[in-house]
Length: 387
Image 1 (cartoon, rainbow, N blue to C red):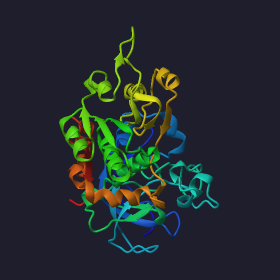
Image 2 (cartoon, rainbow, N blue to C red):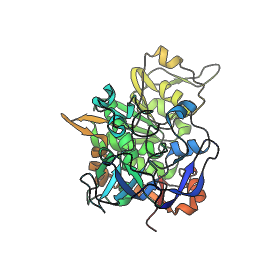
Image 3 (cartoon, rainbow, N blue to C red):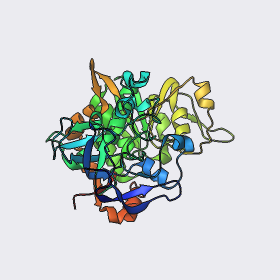
């Protein structure tokens, strides 16, 4: 199909307009091997909400290419036979746009090692700048009633045991898989997960199903979040208001009240996962981790962060970021984060965490529902392109 031969309805963002529903030409195939993909369901991510509200850091502005069609969490079907895929096959998209996708040979050292989300060439190659599909002008995105384009290396076939409602959440689950395996807690460790939105509960699930984690304590604010954290493998759950009252005792230590600022916790958890991305909870993670422990930032940080890093310095804590996914070393084999997420999706009944669904035309309601997801008892709000 020629580029521009059909116009499609999409949700597009630019540097001057946060979001518009408009008809645009279908994206062209960058090279003949690329595949045309029709989205079935597409998710609304916290990073999408941050983009729309201008709360995200401007860090990524030179490596994106507005205007672009949003939506990087999606399950779709192949629109036409190409590159070993048959029309109608269900696939999930791995949105990272690394060297292989961009036609760059030899690949950078990160792509060569399987850490393609950290690609050094995201502003080069066969397509416009963009760290992921959904942030690149040339690929299209999941928030579309038409098609987008994908390199065959980005596509993972969906097993029959994984329904569309689960497959649409494989991308954020893969992010949690990458974070959990990167920290690899042991049975003797106490692991603390701060935040129980989709990122937090998926991290709990990945820790319980793919690592040797022993005790997992989750800080969860809302009733549905607390229930899902326990169902997915948390040992105990505390409310954010108990962060410096009940939680220190659960960690075998105590909190000391300073003249100013947050309490000082001398001991803490061996491992902590910060799944909110807010300055306050990042600081909590540092304060609640024991000396020499590990803190992993899973939530995307906001544009402005004012942190007291004294706990990091004084306790000699290891602070690590966890972005997206990679080829993982799991049980002696190299397996992608996506394949591991697809493997555990039926075990955790991932489909029960997805909904409500909205038509693309109702995007204002969908965005509002995603913003209020926690207090309204939702985990993953999606666009339904099948209705």
